[in-house]
Structures are given as C-alpha cells and as structure tokens.
Amino acid sequence: MIFRAFATAGLGALLATSAFAQNAPTQQQRPPGAPIQLNQPRPPANNAQSAIGRAAAPATVPTISAAQAVQKANAWLNGVTTMVADFIQIGADGKRAEGKLYVQKPGKLRFQYAPPAVMEVVADGRSVAVRNRKLNTQDLAFISQTPLKFLLKNALDLSRDTKVLEVGQNPNATSILIEDKATFGGTSRINLIFDPQSFALKQWTVVDPQGFETVVSLFNVDLKERPDPGLFWINEDVIRE
Image (cartoon, rainbow, N blue to C red):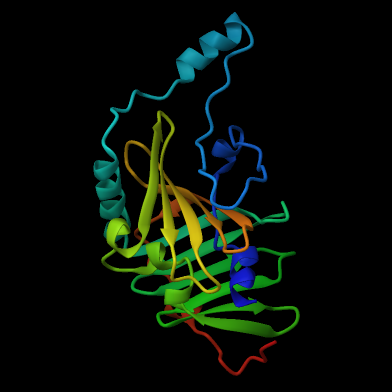
C-alpha cells in the first residue's frame, strides 16, 4: 500500500537530535487513537544529581492557552519558506535511519536517506514519490493524500486544515496532536513537537490508518539555505511496483 510505504519510509515523528536523544522516551506500542503524552522528567537519584538537574533546568515557560499554542505553531510553520536539516527517523519496526531533509515551499521536499537505507522520498509540488534506489521502483501519490501538508503548505491553519485533538505543554516541549482524514487509506494522527520558547518544530510522529507509528526528529536546522531545485525532480519513467 502506498500510504504504508510513506509511513515506513519516514513521514512520521517523535524525538530529535543527539542532544534530545539522551532524554528520549522509549518507543512503546499503544492502541491506535490513544493520546500521545509528553515525556515527564524522572526524579534525580541523589543530591548530586539533584544539583546538576537544578543547574541544567530549562527556563520557566509561561503556560499559554491551546488556541495561542496553535496560533504560534501556525506562525512558525508559515514563516518557513526553505529548510535544510538533518533528521533521525525511528520506524514502526524500531529501526533507525538518518539523512538530510530539504524543503522548498510550496510543495517541494526531499528526504535523502544515508546508506545503508535505500529509500528516498521526493515531493515536486504536485506529487510525492517513494523511491527504492536498490530495486529502481517508486510509488506515487498526490501531496494532499500524505501527511506532508504541515511542512509544504504556504498558508497553513492547523485548526482549519486538520482537526486539533490535543495540546500539551511542559518546560521542554509543546505538543499539538492533529488528525488528518484526507490521507491515503484513511485517517492519520500527527503529533507535532515544538520548542516551547521559539515554537520551532523539533519533531513529529505520524500514526497511520493501520496504527503504525513513525518518528522523525530534526536538528541542525537551517532556514536560510536555498536547496538545489534539482533535488525535487521526480522521474516518472521509473518502474513502479
């Protein structure tokens, strides 16, 4: 199924950089549709660790309303026109992959996976292709059928374009859980994780209609570099499965 290919190829979500990875929650199975909870900090084991924890504690972030959080998320996402970033992905099978993400709005994207991964995901403004470089095959879908809208639309409104199910906040992250009924194969849920101060997107999780979860984390994000337009070309002559 095309959507399953997207899910296992990397259009999902949850934690981030090597810095975030030290505090990353262990991936757990949960019933499809169950709320995604933010990881809570564990209590320090002793006084020395307590002192270290106090020294490294993040600045207090004022709690804002759910509507304000969605508004700030929309503002950050809509303010991004280009993006070049490293990513780490954890698939539904628990396997880890990494590579480079390129975004050029509207509608253009490329997940360039590092070896030994053989997949790559390219959006050219109209279609999205999931390629297997080893087998020389690809599956195509329209962008509107994938969970990529939040990365690729010029004027996004999470409340209008999706259904906001839940907003969570803690000192380390603000999460916005959305539901998208327009994805291929049925309804998907996407949990977007933002920095609570800058509202920069740090990570996202996609749970596809079959309940498979994919986690993608961003780091070394550059919003000024303009990607090479050739990165977004789809060769529609490639043999399809």
